[in-house]
Length: 487
Image 1: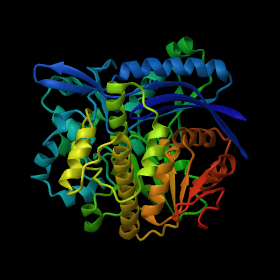
Image 2: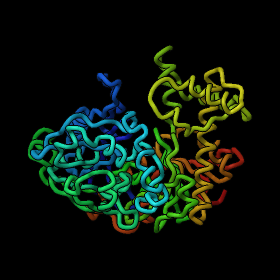
Image 3: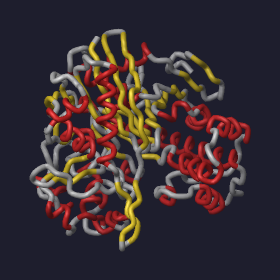
Image 4: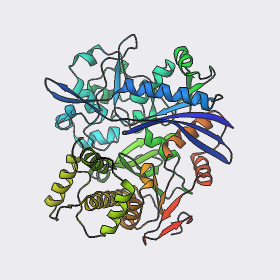
């Protein structure tokens, strides 16, 4: 059974995992974990938010060195990260400046300027993406006219940038490229008219490659610094973390919805082709590419970001918080309390969250939550309601039948969230695996290396057969081991 290394960088943390896969066997071991998040930097024009990509690279190398000691015979490595952010390279390959973070305010008002000249529905039918103010196309427009973009020879999305530092190969993996707003939704390749709209020279962007192929060996300096074997190959996986997570959704058939829940909550269904109707546009659904040319038809929901912000605020004031105890106390609060629009733009920036939650509840006409358990209940139940609405909209707009909701990622540990999502959706919610993204990363590597064969459905069956899952029935009863789709 061959060993594969998954580099998995989320919006709030990163990890390097060692996985092994063969027919009937799938295992995963974390060998290195580290924090991630936007770094505020003061300037004459205000505070900017940056991504410490060099610091992330240092952590990736440390994790790879540990992986080399843990699994000296590793065959491949794959990288997935969050979407839309990028680095600019000079002609000699050096990094030009520190990449800006998607939560940076520089994109404020940019989308509105674009949509004043290009009908929003027309743009949607070209790139298939929901309206998000920080999409790459708007980031590049915000960068236009600045010295860094003018001096750049290449634009690489974050996973492609790390892949270049590993291997020397410049490529744009298709699942992440599809999140930029610069690709044709039907082909998944760069669209000249969209590049022109963003003011981007076509030569700035590398060729798009599909997940599942080997990109090449690692640089000599990386091999020397980590102790990895010279035979190790970098494989293009679903480099958008949600694309990798969807690979590892343990569904029995196609009649499922998924929620990839971490800092963000990505809620949708898997389709053979995009949905580009006016109704889909109005509902703010996106069509992103998945592994094996599937379409991830989904809506971005704010996810656990708001809860994380509340916890960070309480931790700063009082010291570490006991999240499981807070969730248990929130469960005891009971239904009927205040709810907020969890996707309200006020929640997007970093900073104190509790006052924002209370203000949003008051503006919705409810008595604001006061105690910490009440705040947690408000946030978690509001999130569960948003998840259920997104599932309902995905079914209505796509015509795709759904009998079960799979909730994967860190949110699968949150029993209250899983239970409330089942209640709100009226569907069984199957929680797990927590490390779906890293598992999907490893599964694509293993299939590329020939250790596994078959379709996505075959890969998902392996996850289902090797990982413990918990099903939350809409009746609120916890039903361990319930057969998927029978609740």
